[in-house]
Image (cartoon, rainbow, N blue to C red; front, side):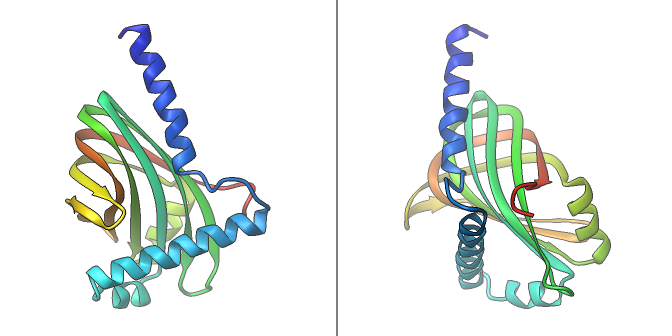
Length: 187
């Protein structure tokens, strides 16, 4: 791969990290931003899929993440943040995420992920290991509330995952890994 491609990828990842960043602020201000994002994302999901509200209520817990992703021909990268809520205790665990992968595609998107953990063991495993890998294919062209997207729904054992695009333009098919980890500064 040429030096220009590497430079472009590093530049796009730098821009991307700013897209998914909470920005500056105190610990409490950052937590408030994450909780506001969580509330907004859940309201949007409940509007599209009202039955999810009862799934979340009866689950062991759930997670909501904001993520920005860039795909440049053969390489995909993304970064984001979110919060995991344990329903039994109400405990909130603030987390970060990063993803990388290979495959065909081009574009950038700002998207949301909601995970529903149906068993205690699923949420415990996620909080301890936080690793998820898999294949991803999507097409999206969305600016604010205009445009279209293909949103996904997946079921992996004891976890349901919903994704939808907030803004972006992307056409991609990738095999990627995503790492979730606890935010040492916010917990």
